[in-house]
Amino acid sequence: MGTITARRRRDGTTGYTAQIRLKRDGKLVHTEAETFGTKALAKEWMTRREADLDTQRARGEPVGKRMTLGDMVVWYEGREREGEPWGRTKKADLARLKLGPLRDKRASTFASCA
Image (cartoon, rainbow, N blue to C red; front, side):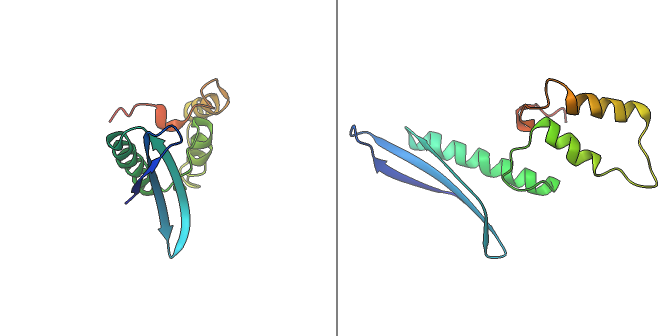
């Protein structure tokens, strides 16, 4: 669960900083913070970002790392099993994704089809 703190800005307005800190086995594994003009925006960002981090953890990705499509393809290629090799088309499609123009886009920006 994250924390929202209010602070006074130099111009007199109030800014709300949403902070997320994740610990595993007593060690800090990820921290991030964003500042917003309203408390509602800060709460919405914090809720959405915590859900994203939980989804990453459930998929087995490193928590907090925002993977690009190229990184995700490399990670996925490491999952190929020894006794069950992939076909030529799948390997070609993965190579195209890994080297194509979309490789530097963050994977979280793509919509899920499920």
